[in-house]
Image (cartoon, rainbow, N blue to C red; front, side, top):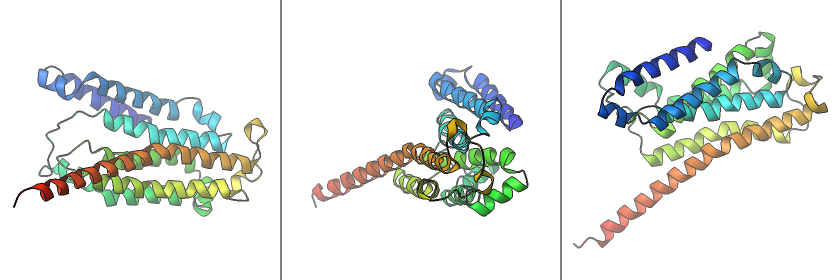
Length: 252
């Protein structure tokens, strides 16, 4: 995770230094984008490379809060920090690769697989037994969420032909797996995960209360993305209505 963070930061700031030598590069890469990307890197580092890892390991709710920072806060900051008007097209090898990687159905499949498999009791219990949950789960949340947010925010229009309406529908579909898992956690009458059944929780919470709070954290964290999807759908419907109105009023 640290290597990926360092590589991402190095590639970004190296490209930034080259681009901002010209007036055109400065226009493509305003300082507010740099600030957003830098904030995303800081939160990424704080969620994965500081004492937060050990502290959140004592509480399912705090652990879920850390995962939600990686899934719902860091990715949009990184995506919004990318330069505008990139020259990348689908004809280039990198453009074809990113076009496939950021295809809405591919992004949705990867995101749903991560959310569903790692949160059903059998999958989570197996990951704990094999000791893969702690190192792998934060990385999977980050990468799959980066794919989803890249579809929603469309930072590379040359390789992402999706309209704002398509992105709105995609955002609603992408929100469903996380909201479903959160609802199960909130309303389940028992603790679903074997490692947490008799675990000692912070603040004298019971394991069931800890699980329910985790569900609320996940549900609340997903609301901004769902709200953005509704806004995109409304903008699409308004544009659609305006287009039909113009066609109707046009003289024959």
